[in-house]
Amino acid sequence: MRWTKSRIRTTWGRSAARHEVAGVAGVVIPERRSASVTAAACKASAGAVEHLRVARVRNLADWLAEGRNDRWIYGADAEAERAYTDVDWTGRAVLVLGSEGGASPTVRGSCDELFPSRSPGRSAR
Image 1 (cartoon, rainbow, N blue to C red):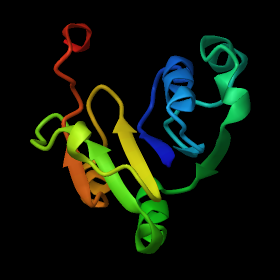
Image 2: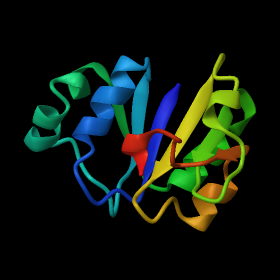
Image 3: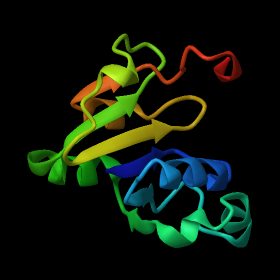
């Protein structure tokens, strides 16, 4: 699975640590208006960033469109109804996460399916 972040404005190190533990193969980051792999991100990830492949792309929506043929693209969206636990994560998949405001409409439109960005746990509120 590849994990993409759309419109990141903060350090994503802690998220990278959780995703690396979950088996994510790599991270795709837009070239503009997003965080970079910095010393602070590496420190916040507890070294997880060192074990992830990181790619920077010019346009995330274009990158998603190019890969549509051989993988499913799932996006997190606050308004979605299908639970992330109902998604079949086997095979090639891309998980698109946005900033606090969510992914851009263009990136959301590139997803095959959307699931809620909030989980039902007490710590997710």
